[in-house]
Image (cartoon, rainbow, N blue to C red; front, side, top):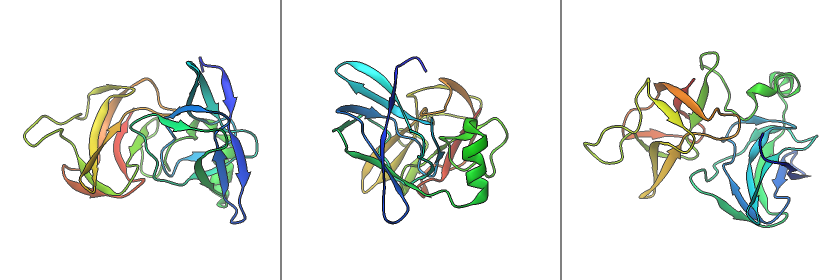
Length: 199
């Protein structure tokens, strides 16, 4: 990480969930993907304060699956102690082992069905996925395309609002190749559903 590290704050709820809080005032982006398994040291975005960027990471004792949906298409203004997201507790033995032993997989959605060495870009919310910016236009991406952080991969429509799905986030490389687009144009999708697979 090139930026200095800033630890997020956490609070434990009565329901066993962990609430992750902002450690300061600023702008926060992008959050991990909904359904991602995260643990101590996982980067959960960038916090910009007074023109300086910090790598925001989870402290010791914070682990679980990220509850969604979360806004991923723009920076979010945050205050000190403001809740960023909740983590469902790690109960399955397999999840606990991943958190303990394989930090490289943290920050990504559940890897079921993904080829080795790939990452999944998932839908942040329920809606309709569009591969094109307009009817008759070329798709945002096709298999084999090279993508960079911040590049649009599609749109998810929710109540007549079109939300851009962009490449990047904690744990993703700056550039990657599109391996697979798992949804057809105008397909209904669910929060956490894999949309695009990259390598």
